[in-house]
Amino acid sequence: MTRTRSRGWLGALPLLAFFAFVFGVPAVALVAGAFTAQGRPSLANLTQSLQGGYLTAMIGSVKLSAVVALLGAVLGTFLAQAVVASRGTLLREAVLTASGVLANFGGVPLAFFWIATLGNSGVISGLVGLPSGSLYTFWGLVVVYLYFSVPLMVLVMAPALDGLRPQWREAAASSGATSWHYWRFVALPVLAPAMLGGVVLLFGSSFSAYATANAMVGTVVPLVTLKIASALTGDVLIGYENIALALSLDMVVVAGLVMAIYLPLQRRTSRWLH
Amino acid sequence: MAALTGLERVSGTVTRRPKAWRGVVFALAAAYFLVPLGTSVWYTIYTPTAGVSLSAYGELLTADGFVRSLSLSLGLAVATIAVVLLLALPAMLAVRLFAPGLRVVMEVLCTLPLVVPPITFVAGIGTSLRNGTEVLAPTPFWATLIAVQDPAFPVVLVLAYVVLVLPFVYRSLDAGLRTMDVRTLVEAARNLGASWPYVLVRVIVPNLRSALASASFLTLALVLGEYTVASLLGYEPFAVWIVTVSGSKGQLSVAVSILSLLLIWLLLLAVSTVFGRKKGK
Image (cartoon, rainbow over all chains, first blue to last red; front, top):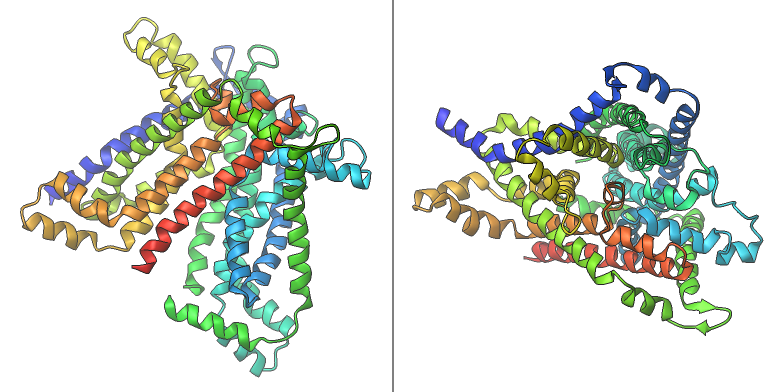
């Protein structure tokens, strides 16, 4: 017994040690730095990170991620249902493959894509006479972020929608339920955990996005990732690194809270749909 | 699972009501997703003065630093794949065979990098490196710390990427291990006198080939496209280089974006072909 257990530890030890070092050291440095000001333990960084421009940036990030997550979830679910309900295998394959590609398409290239389309010298903005700078706003970012969020939601929802048994719809119909009743009282409650999981996933990916926003809006739209980056790269005064660490800690707390909703939900999803 | 797939098809034919909304949804989705794609392609090949030309793509391939940054990215990707597989595979096998109690620990470890936004991870790494350089200055470890940050091959990026891809590699390998009876295979091989390395290389790895391949492709895709960590730590692999080189040249930057979309598509195609072949068997 002890021999097999020690073997288990032996195999897992390199990974655990690696993780403890590469993930643990920065985590400790982050927390220690966030609680240190002028070489002394203090709450000054954290207090400052929740005030003024930093607070605006945090609220901006949360608002942007929430809007993208909700819009993306609704639009993605509709698209997924349209795909699942359609009879064409080719269409279905095409949409799912495209979703897989676009859900992974982010970062700077995504920003360039939209700048070429709706930017100040973009092809479409010239055609429709879009006022200069329209893309470089809060709602411009929402439009751009949906480009990877909607496909991500399609990927989450397509299997869940596939799992809805036709018998449930038939049973509902023979009990006199309308289509609305079926969706409201049967399908949506079964799909709810998957949908909420999708919302959380979308929220997280928009919340931590940095490259796209940096290439698109610079500092026009206040976002917490942009504030952290500018504090880290020393665009501002020396000594702001610890503010960056405090902001990072705030971000981890928000992301952790959101993830804490997600994990139990993920387990509930599997109760009905497998 | 197969029964479920059969039933879905039935559902498709049972609900045979005309669905105009579906057409509307597809049309809107097609407009939203295809218009930027089309306009971006047009933007890269057409200028009012020169007409249609592919010069933006040619300029990209011959630009200074293309080979250097791409080979750095590929090198980082190969190192990351090697390290992450060497760490994750033995650990997952050991947990499965000898220490099921560690499973929860593994799951938590492999979820943490998803919760922590990459930019906060970079903030932590940057601070550790700065503090480490001060603290370790009088010791021999100082030289190691400097070597790890060598711009020619920043090992620190490999370490960071291993952590970032761990969740994806874990999911991939876990799915692969589920499809085989690890315990029986290992016990049979051991009873026949095979040594542990032999079991690993000749019994486990061949059965896990597609899971290993998909984990590697996902890692490759992530490392090639990774921008946040590399740029904030001040290195210039491919994803950072394309931004630097195309910064002021509109056409070039959009050409890069189209190429990266193609690259993602090719990598995903590779993953699905590997998995598709396995299904056919």
